Picture 1 (cartoon, rainbow, N blue to C red):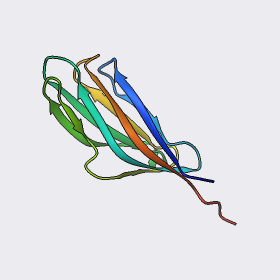
Picture 2: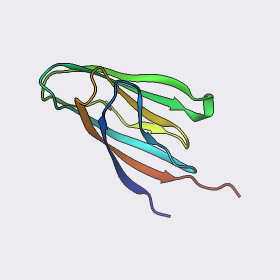
Picture 3: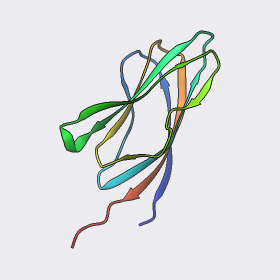
Picture 4: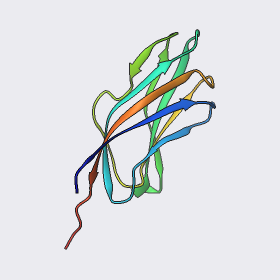
Length: 113
């Protein structure tokens, strides 16, 4: 089956960690960009976390930035490889100020025979 190019748009409406993408079963995901925009007039901190489904959902912080007013930044400094069941979460210092889009290539896992 063909690989799938996808995007996941998000608005962080809370200051809690928000799951913005979960890798579907039997797929591997290559996260190419995590573009975030501070749509408010003040500075806002944004954090990005991944959880590893194959390691008891161990969580790792992979980015932490302070964004000025009306600033756009790509928080993926390189391709991020996530496996089936892994998640990508974002957290903002202030609710309703951060929006963005994630660009992903999903690869179908090959079945062993």
